[in-house]
Image (cartoon, rainbow, N blue to C red; front, side, top):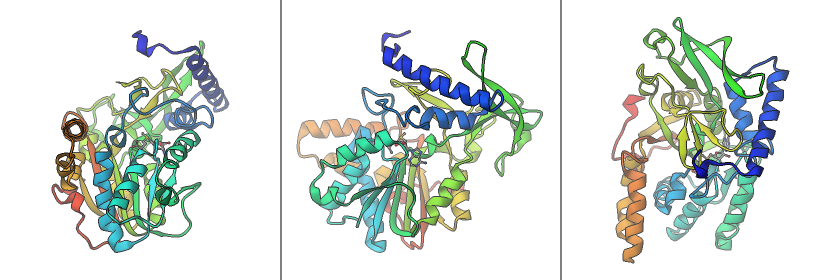
Length: 382
Ligand SMILES: C[S@@+](CC[C@H](N)C(=O)[O-])C[C@H]1O[C@@H](n2cnc3c(N)ncnc32)[C@H](O)[C@@H]1O
């Protein structure tokens, strides 16, 4: 094994604890757990899961890098989209899954510079570990900004006007896995072998495929993922949005492309120390597990919840439309300009994040063209 992939004694002990807890759940469930339950435990079991325990996760010393961690350019662009909406709706920003707090910090600083601060900047974060990191980081902001930040334990009971942000949150929602058998989608689960290692099992259950997916078009043995918590997530966010915008960015595709018959192995990806691989039963509790987002499902859920799908585009088109090039050119210092240009390339280039990441805009009561979606409209693909 490459030296950088070797686990420390503490990491081995942690992975063993998580494995024990999951094995106990498998035994209690009679020998197998649906994949979504396994993923939920591996990522979010209190004190054990990847997001709930202390793994470093983000940045160079972690497992993966997200757009707000790559560059403040991402947050500056999003701030301009927020300003446009807040100018009409007033109100607050609510960010889901704020990671290290990097996006929150940049958005608040940018909006302050534009004289367009939201009333409050709410954060809803399921991970206690990340919430503590966000609190530490955002406490260092100018006190006039830090005062506006508040953490929520659950969604607000009243509808808030303003903007909801969710960057790389939907791909972290636990997903089900299936394999096509005789024209039907058989649910996959997780069992434990005699030596204790986890392995995949085919459950005696069938999953309904999403609308528009012709089961017979998917070859026998085809594997894919479904995210049962996506629809409820959109519905619950819609329920607490007054007049305003939900802006969700993530890697994913419209349904037709996501479940293309040629994509026979699905999109499940695990991240450990900047290596992406497809082995969810390795290093449980120490690695991230994600699946690409079905943006057609997001749009359907939004329409069911009474929201309008106001835009769907690539991350590159979003950031270009929101002026990322001006931000780079505007750096007064040559070294900084050079560094920003390199960051922009990572965010924009098709072989980096530019094409595989998409942005979707869901609105309520906003009769307003959104600048971020002016350059490219991919809604017809949904
Ligand atoms: C891949 S990280 C992205 C973090 C951050 N948005 C960024 O772009 O750097 C996923 C984040 O979503 C959070 N999360 C996952 N499910 C969530 C949910 N249902 N509600 C709120 N946050 C959630 C995780 O704890 C984590 O902060």
